[in-house]
Length: 262
Image (tube, rainbow, N blue to C red):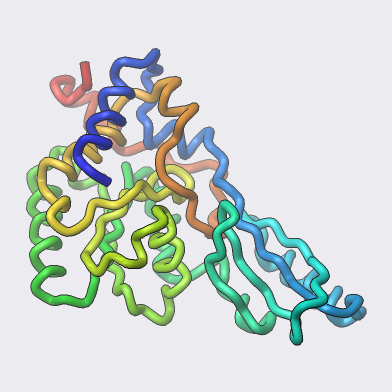
C-alpha cells in the first residue's frame, strides 16, 4: 500500500458523509466477511463415506467465512480439495485430514480475540527472513506505536514468512494483492473489523508517516465511501463475531478531543 493510496482512504473518510462510529468499529459491527470457497473435486460418483466425511468437515468449519461444495471432474486421477478466494486458488489438499485447521491457527485465534476485545486493529508484521531488513522495519513499528496516542489499543503480531503452522495465513496475506508473493520484503498488514487485512506497507514504505496514516484511517469517522468501497481482503477464520467488547479507541477520543478528525 503506497502513501498516496493511504491518503486517499483517509481524506475520503473525512470528506464523505460520515457517521460518528469509527471505521474499525463500524466494520466489526456491520460488515460481513467475504467468503472463501472450498471445493472437493472428484472423478467418480460420491460414495457414502465421502458424503459423510464432507458433512463432518462442513460442521467443523462453522462459523468460518467458508462455503463448501463438491464438483465432478473427469480429467483428474485422484480426488482433492482446493481453496479459492475471489476466483484465485489459495491452496490444495490431498485429503480431509489436512483440513482440520483450515479455518483456525494460533495466530488467527489471537488476532480474532484481540479484535473482539475492542482493539483498534492488529498490525501483522510478516517478516521476510532477512534479519537486517526485518529488524529495521520492526524498530519503526515499535517507535511509531510508542509515540502514538492509540498505541495501547493496537496489537502487534510478528509472523515468519516460512512458518509451517501459519502457512495458510501467510498464503492468504500474500494474496491480498496479486503480486505480493514475488516481493521478498517485510510487510505490515493492518487487520481490522472481522479479520479484514489492508494492502500492506512494505520495505521502505514501512515508515512512521505511513503507519500513522493507517491509524488515521482506522480512527476516522466511517463514511458512505468507506462502507461502499471497503479496502482490503477478508482472511479465513472461524471467530464468532457476535457481541464484541466496546471499542477501546472511543475512551481515548472522549478524553482527548484534540485527537478527533475534523
